[in-house]
Length: 315
Ligand code: NAD
Ligand code: UDP
Ligand code: UDP
Image 1 (spheres, rainbow, N blue to C red):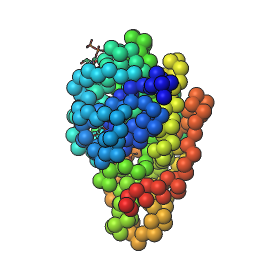
Image 2 (image 1 turned 135 degrees about the horizontal axis):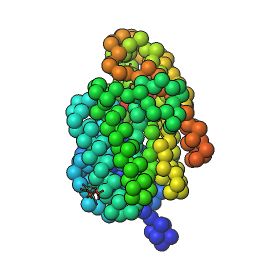
Image 3 (image 1 turned 120 degrees about the vertical axis):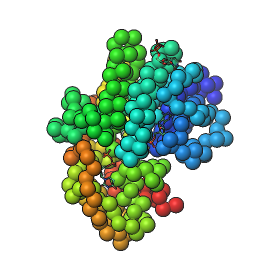
């Protein structure tokens, strides 16, 4: 007990009421840490953290990270930012502000506290990639003025800030480039492909395939991602990233639709809708770096992860 207390950390998770953040919060609490969850509830929900309200080690603060934040913590995970194209394009100026002003404030906080800070970056920094699979050394193919730019360029600028605070001020940073992740607690109206397809299949509504469905993505189950995030935070100071975190098994979106229909036993039909502008044609992480530095690789395959996610949306 005493030992636990002396090694207990107070950890800040921004975006902790969101999909990935709420799983990370659960894991950090499970390991005996105190958690301060900061979220403006734009895409997150109190429902994702309601099971924690009686936990004395958990604290929720409604706050927008584009505003300064003065708190005392030992570690910071910066996840606050809408992740679904539908939501980050809803108010693109706020999305860029969250990525850039939010990063500046969280880096300022980390600088004052001299604490480690993790950044949830994204495979979107690679844009519509001309290199496949994507390695961390690839600089990307990103449209700076398109509908996805608020997110892609915002996250790219956040990476720049993280590396400048590291080089200029010696801050300990951990930058993860997260690839498509899914699982329970995605919002039913999140707009991302896995939640859309599952909700449509369960409701017997048409499955909305954008384009011809031949574009690819590689889907990582949320528990696998959280494991990698915790391992990355625990690495020595010399490990800064950027490091790809994701599942390298690649599927076309049409294959995903078939799988969801099969696993739900749905009678839904497929409808083909126009491909959104700048939608990446293919995406698959090279996770060699994560394998060697974190001794990590995903263990939940798509069928098993989808089954758990379908169960969540069915109840
Ligand atoms: P999410 O939308 O479920 O969670 C984001 C959370 O951030 C929400 O709770 C939202 O309310 C909060 N938020 C947004 N703007 C904020 C602000 N200005 N101040 C405070 N809180 C704010 O998305 P997610 O899938 O859980 O993504 C979490 C992080 O991981 C994001 O930074 C996202 O860019 C990154 N990421 C996710 C994926 C994925 O596939 N899930 C892939 C790449 C990167
Ligand atoms: N900041 C914060 N919490 C802190 C310390 C700083 O939110 O505990 C914010 C502060 O508002 C500032 C930003 O972080 O705008 C960047 O801080 P930094 O010290 O790097 O820059 P400066 O204050 O010198 O502009
Ligand atoms: N997509 C689709 N139907 C949907 C939602 C998305 O076909 O209802 C496609 C989308 O065009 C993209 C892929 O699925 O090619 C993944 O989309 P998502 O929004 O989940 O994430 P992205 O990787 O594009 O950020």
